[in-house]
Length: 115
Image (cartoon, rainbow, N blue to C red; front, top):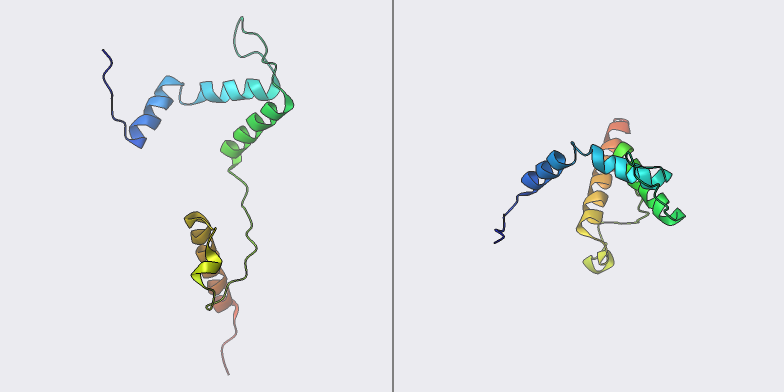
């Protein structure tokens, strides 16, 4: 009889680290896909198509150096209506807010005092 276990995100991530030699086995596996090299003693080389190999390379790069920043070209003003912002995710809107705040801060810091 199987007993269901409720995991928190932290507990699940710790379990994955514990079972994969702190993630090393995952990296080795994805690396073997990216390069087509054998994973271990007696293992066969993985024959992956170029698309799968590129996905593996992207996965490794994202985790090694972080995902590249995404640029959002947006013209927004105080008169922008909520309808004009439909289609953007909450994460997109938060990123826009952060960018606007940084720009406003830069403009305040870079402005010269009034005479």
